[in-house]
Length: 411
Image (tube, rainbow, N blue to C red; front, top):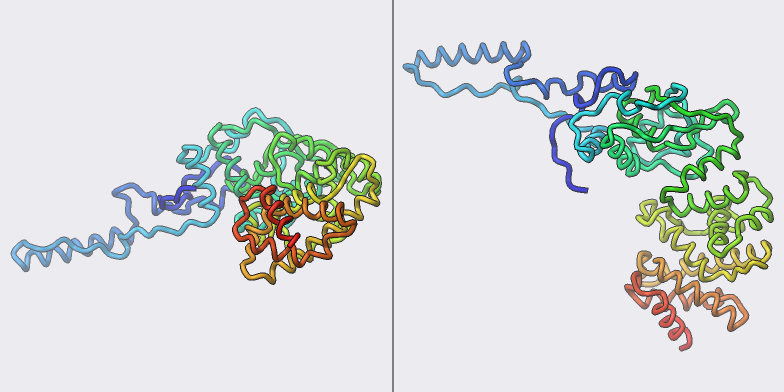
């Protein structure tokens, strides 16, 4: 993102009428900064009069020659620092090519539904990591259960907000399910977060509401989000929820049978089972949800999923019990592999736990068992040493890494 230029306080760009209670916090802030030339406060006028008088007296004493008076502190305009929320709004306005935000009713024109305060709808699945969203969550206290682990991301809020502002209206309706008397958003959480940032969490917007069970609401979330990209964890959740009709409490044999109908979906079963439910065992090292690894994970769910794609021998006739046994063994292997890697000089998680490297390790893992009839965990320390010794292999093709690993392990 290009570096933002400091253009003064964003407040005062926001509308201060007709947007609901949320806009009141912006009223009047930064008014001094945006005064037109010639507008001054009483204190400033008094200071200027005093200085003009002193200048006149000095001029008379010196024969009419004097230097212009220096500006007093009262005359200097003080630029107020932008808050994190100011910055988010300014970025969205700039991307949309706008100087000021339109009124809420302009963006929501043509929308029908029950007028509902944003803070009365379940948006967040947990505590947001971003401070701007944390501020919104303080007033939006209803937990969203229907989206499971799917977080609201500030980057996505900013992107969607800029798109809505650029279009000058919101085309898709906000949808919510009423589950046991509680409203939870099934479509439009990022749009609601955008509106809450711009107009305040207590502002009312039209919402299409349907009475649903929790399972029906989760199914609705899957359908609503099929057209957009999602993180690996969210994709796995959607796959399983769609297979079991939204009922995450489905008995495990049924969940496996309905979900793992292809090898790709079998991997989604693994992701959901391990990272959402901790079954059959958990990883002993941290795994990040996203490729940025901002959560501090050594690798990502996507990379682990790629490892499973190569390491697990799934067939249509594979029973849930046998598949779960394979899954458990693979996690035990990965836990020991990472533990030994971390002891090696030159270990770099970005290189040695990358997608292509783990795919190569997964292929060696399953090949070793096929050839030797035993689990590769018995040689895991040597595997860890050989992989780390290869150095920068993060972008090396998995086949090349596999061939090098197989050759090194034969020595």
